Image (cartoon, rainbow, N blue to C red):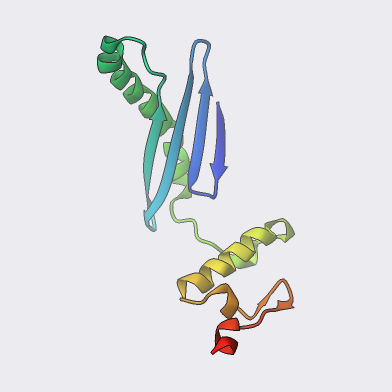
Length: 131
């Protein structure tokens, strides 16, 4: 089984078994200080026949989804209440720190042009100079 984390809350789970491979996408969304919503999307190989697609595929998807959800539940439980602490970042987290700074500005209604400095380079507020 492999787990690839994309952007913190988007997780691709690939489980390779002897006869089949399961693919699942897990989206984690915090609901509060101690709660996380996991949305699990599972890709199931389609059966060739109508009966397989109508009867077997939905059951197969439900079983695969339950395995992926059970696997990810402990991670969601351990991640509940995690909060961003900029003082805990190291040099390797530089891009993450830049992203969080951008997110802070964007959620405050500021654009990149309003930001002031980035990476020690002074930016110009073009919006104000144009008018």
